[in-house]
Image (cartoon, rainbow, N blue to C red; front, side, top):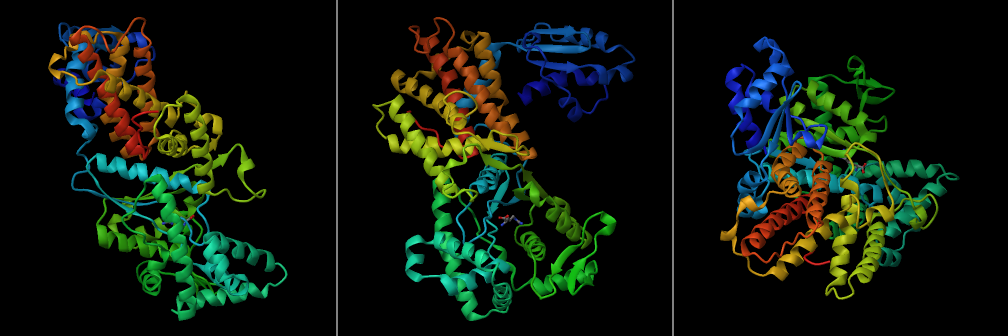
Length: 567
Ligand code: ARG
């Protein structure tokens, strides 16, 4: 569709000195569908042309008379409204989509550029909490989108694997830990003893000091401390790996906070040299008053380093290793202040790349039905939510299609997909509340809905058998419903480009829902049959359906969902 907009611009741009790039951004969706497919407001040209926008619109409309791409070009007040010809769209879009196949939607803006994504990044030694799904699936989708648009993406899981909490865990494990329990319950045993620490510390505050000492020992490279930490680390990674496998998400690097433990003195020295630090109540800080920010804490009075210290070290390291053009931190908006602070420190250190750092913040996630949390008020774990969703999907699959061969396989795709899509369909910055009925509904803006749209079209193709593409006749795709589908297929690459730039996968999720809806409207045209008697009609309609499935599958896959061939 971008190519089409630029054709319009080419036709008009010689009349005005308006830069073509900005010209391209002027187009709007007409408020009322009857007005057409695309509207160009003519106000921006009035001054230069010394004429009323209405007159410009009227004049320009005449330019498009007789052009095959348009069924109608009309002036409506100051707007120039374009209605595309369905057959002409079909001629341009369908063969191109089929030819591109799985590569449909790809772009080249990112060629030669690198994006580094810091996402998921859970804290070790406890199971991944449900709300961590957000960073995980949003980050994954944004990485996929960048790859689709030509970027090289580097996926980093910045595990929370260093900090005073591991001192606490060492104390707790040494007191209440049990090797057999650990083997049996794995990460959950670590959580148990950690929870116990917080209970016991209320009556034994000295535990707190002990914990601090253990963390200091960790930072000094003490063997016993590090052996325990290693044990916690390995158990955690085993558990996390299982979850990432279920979600079909992979990382290029598991580079946690601990990677930087030996470079922190050097980093603090560097900050001091380039920006200057102050000592406040024994702690080392960077004063950020003139940036209207609270001070950035680099070292506590007991000598321990902090989250910000490690993030500064990590950013420098990532630039040295990857020379990124974009470094994206996909992290909840609660951490905004932390990011503003250490971004500011890096900027003041004079790194030109500091402006390429972005905090990709997102809203909170909740479950409406919290009955699944075992003990009240406790965190909900991601694997439990996935289990429940897959179980519910299995019930639905059994009920809807008793004949289906691989019910478990489909239930896994649908159940996990429901959670992933249920998250991604929301604008990234919004808060999200999950309701089981809603995210697993076969209607509405759900993964199931899109997967079902895909599976249904695939079954139709299986029934149709081999298809003679040479019979394609775009003139046969002249219904308004078909034109809507064509437009959405044609817009898909543009939507990917935008979603990538804005780091918002919801743009893609919503587009898929819209496409499914439009496609269903074709299905329900009175008397309409894809498997028509007439061979040309049949081939042409099936090719439209095939182009639709290409977009659905590609879109789902970019979002991290699988597309079942049958449901
Ligand atoms: N581990 C942190 C948490 O669970 C998220 C880390 C985000 N990334 C970063 N570079 N600070 O909240």
